Length: 235
Image (tube, rainbow, N blue to C red; front, side, top):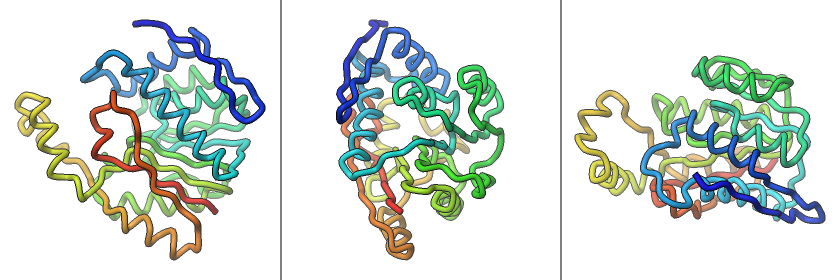
C-alpha cells in the first residue's frame, strides 16, 4: 500500500494528513470490511469522500465541537475527527462487539457502546450525529427511519447519513453486484440489503421544519458510488 501525505486547508486552518494517520485510516477501514474490489486509489478515494463531507458542512456554515456516530465500527471516522480536527467529545455505537473493542483501543476517551442503533441514548447530545454505510444493513425501512428519528433527537446541529442505498437504483445495483461477485445470490442469501426512497428522508425533514441537502457521492473508486446518496439534515 502506498502511503499518502496531504496538506488540507480548511478555512483558515491548515490540516496535515501524515503517513501514520493515513495508514491507521486504511487499517481501520479494512477492519470495517472495506477490503473488497480494491483498486489503485481506493483508500485515497474513501478519505477524499470523508473530506468532502466536512467541506459540505463548512459550506453550509456548520461548525461542530462534538461528533457521535451510529454504526461507528472500528472508530475510523471518529479517529479522523480526533486527530485532524482535534475534536475532544466523541461517541459512537455499534452492534459488533469486536469492532467496538478496536474502537476502544483507538479512542481511549470516547463514549462508545455495544448495542443496536435504535437504542442510542438521545439525552446525551452531540453537535454532529452521523452514520456511514450502515442503513443498508438495517432490517427494513421502518427500522431505518426510527434510527433517523433518534439521530435527529440526539443532534444539536446536524445529522449526516452517508451511503444510503437509493430505491430507484435498486435493480441496477443488484445487477452490478451479481456481475461483480460470483454466485452472489447464494453467497449473500439471507443478507438482503435495504433500499430507501429519497422522499422518505425529505418528508421527515419537512415535518421537522429542517433544512436538508441530498448529496451525490463522488468516489469513483468505490463501486457503490453510483447507487447511493447522502442526506444532510440541518437543525
